[in-house]
Length: 218
Figure 1 (spheres, rainbow, N blue to C red):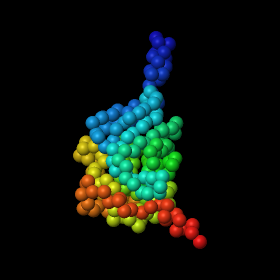
Figure 2 (cartoon, helix red, strand yellow):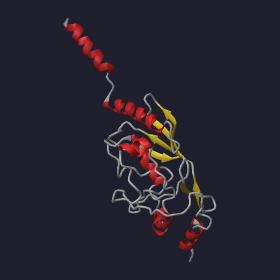
Figure 3 (cartoon, rainbow, N blue to C red):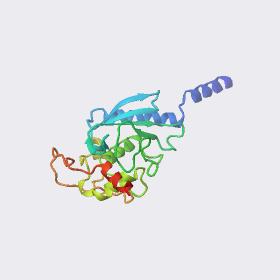
Figure 4 (spheres, rainbow, N blue to C red):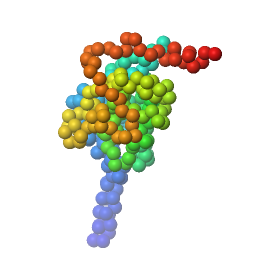
């Protein structure tokens, strides 16, 4: 009898997933439920069982720098998220696979460490990055891209690039999604404007090349 009990306990312990694995399973379920029919954010790739690497495609307006140095709009962005062995105690590793011109993005990293906490849901982080892409949120005090920080500070009247609610309706109902002027105080907030949704304000916009030449000219 005693040996049978021990065997049952060992079998139960073997089958019980670790806290990290349970978190990964919950993340996958939550992401699938929230973004399954949401056109602005879609899960377009994942690897692992349960997934430890995700790709998300955002269909929102953001900025990038063209080969000629112009700041242009683009409406599709791809994000890769790697949930390392330290997750969720350590922040996910996030990088854009498409170019983004933003104070808190560079070629290899999205700056999420300043606001990540283990208690935060992965879905919340994905939505927040969408708000960052659209310039509803940005931090110019400790930027990864100093030029973008300077540009944002000088052109706040053009922001946000996309003022739509990035979160799915279920999130908006369950949790108050901050308005553009209702963000955490450590973030510099973009200002809303009344331009029409189909108006392109970037036809006569700053060119990075010309700014650089000013700084490097004797």
